Amino acid sequence: MWSFSIGCRALEVSARVERDVTMKTRLARFPFVKTLDQFDFSFQPARNSAQIRELATARFVAHGENILLLGPPGVGKTHLAVSLGVAAIMGGISVVFFTVADLVDLVQQDVKEDRLERRLHALCKPTLLILDEMAYVPLDQRSAQLRFRLISRSYQKGSIILTSNKSYGEWGDVVSDYVLATAMLDRLLHYSTTINIRGESYRLREKRKAGVFHDLGAKPVKSSPSSSPKTQGEGQSEINSQYDGL
Ligand code: ADP
Ligand code: MG
Image (cartoon, rainbow, N blue to C red; front, side, top):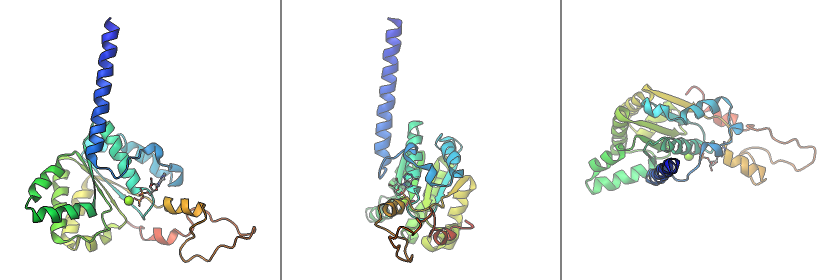
């Protein structure tokens, strides 16, 4: 009888935890749900693997640290950001995910409807804020300021994961205000881990494997049996060099 009631209690708790995870995952507004188990670390430089697995413990949130995932398109920045978000939710942490483009659209709408403050308040509630694709959209002054305030507030009470295909030096261009860009970087980098992913695009690798894509600018590959297969990462050195010295 005793063990039966303990068993029931355990079931109740696990059902509650599951409901909590489902609810938090829905509220997080991820573009897709992928976990770290689905990330092929053998495809990316091995040195990232242990570091990322440590981040998946979500200790960085408890310490109020931020994560910056930088690298060229297709290398898995969004996948990793989502996976870390999912791992944080498993640890009971509330998360919200936005692409910077979506955030800009929202801000523009909010300004029209005079509810920017409410939005800011709502965005600052989750403990972990994921801002994806920080450089794809040039930000106007107002959106940049909102983001700065978001970063400042989260900095005091939560953590941010930010992904970007731009190096720090290029952030002034997208924020359209050099002073603001510097202040934002200052806040973000104070307690942070930066992960530079320098591998080949996973998407293009899949396409290349299927034979539908060749490196831009590369000579057409002859299908003669003597032509040697491309080694992984070849043709990427030029793209990756943009990320040197970040
Ligand atoms: P990025 O945000 O850097 O442009 P994404 O995270 O959108 O790249 O990755 C593009 C696609 O490739 C996604 O479907 C993602 O799940 C997949 N992908 C990228 N890198 C890996 C990897 N190392 N292992 C498994 N899937 C990957
Ligand atoms: Mg992405």
